[in-house]
Length: 355
Image (cartoon, rainbow, N blue to C red; front, side, top):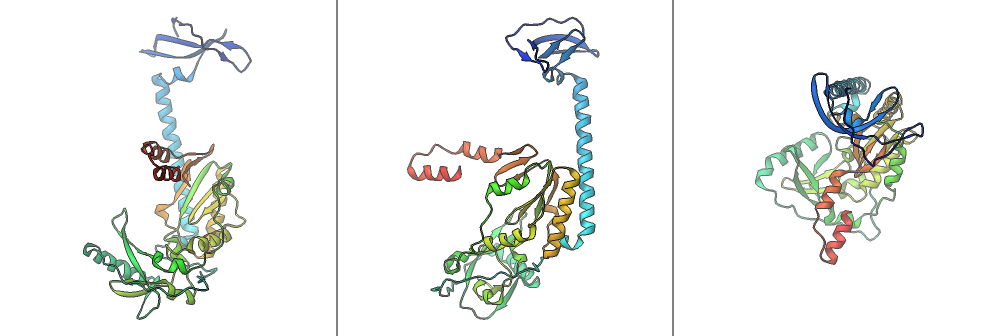
C-alpha cells in the first residue's frame, strides 16, 4: 500500500497478544490499478499492515476469491448430496416406491368411550368443479386399498375437499362431527421441542425425511374400520388405513415413530417429520442409513422429492436449526411484527396464542 491518510477514532481494539490498537481509519489508495475508497479496520505493526474484514471485502480481488470459493463449496455440497441420494435409492429402492407403504409392525386400534353411540352424518355438497378430481382421488384410494365401498354403516362422517398447492385435491374426513367426541384419546405423549432439539445438538448438517401420506401407511384393525366410514357423493366408503383428522391418530403415529427410531443416534421425530444429523459427514451418513434400514423394516415409504438431504440449515418446529443451534424463524417473527396492536381482551388472547 502507498501512504494513506489515517483518521483517528475513539475506537479501541484488544489484540490477541493483549496489546491495544486504535484501528479505525479511512483511506483512498491505488490497488491493482483500481482506485478503492472506503472505511475499514487496520492494525499497524512493525512488520506489516493488517487489514480487517470490513476493509478486505471492498477489494475486487477479495470479491472474486469469495465468489470462486463459495461456488466451489456449493458444487462440493451438491455433489456429496447427489452421491448420498443415489446410494440410498440403490440400497432402499422399496422405501422410495411411488405407492402407499404399509406398517408391518402394528395396526391402529380406536377405543370408544363407555357411553359412546354411533353418529351418522349426511353427505355435504361438493362444488361441481371439484367432482372430476374428487372421483379420481376416490378411485385412487380404492385401488390402493386405503378405502373400500360399503352399503351400510352406523357411523358416517362428511368429507371436505381441500385444494393443494400443486392444483390437486385432498379428500379429508370431518370426524369432528361425531366420532372424535366418542373416542378415547390415545395417551402416548408427543415429544416437547426440548426433547427434539436435544437429540440434534452438535449436528453439522441436517436431513429432513418426508413420509408419503404418513398416517395412511398405518392399517386399522377390523373393529375400528366401521367407525371410519365417510359419506360422499358416491355413497359410503370406510377407511382401511388411519386417516388424518382422527383424534387418536397423532398419539398412535407418534408411538410407532418412537418405536421405530428407538436406539438410533442423531435422529428425532415429531409425528411424521423426521430429522437426521451427525457431528461429522461420516457419522451423518451412518445415522441416515441406520434410519432407512428401520424405515424399510417397518414398511414405510418416503417421498424423495419432498426430502431435504445434508442441508446446512432447516426449518423445524417453528425454528431455524443449524450447526450453531436453533434460532427463531424470521418468517414467524415477521408475522408477529405485522400483527396489529390488540385493542380488546379477545385480540390479546389471539396475539398471545400466536406468540
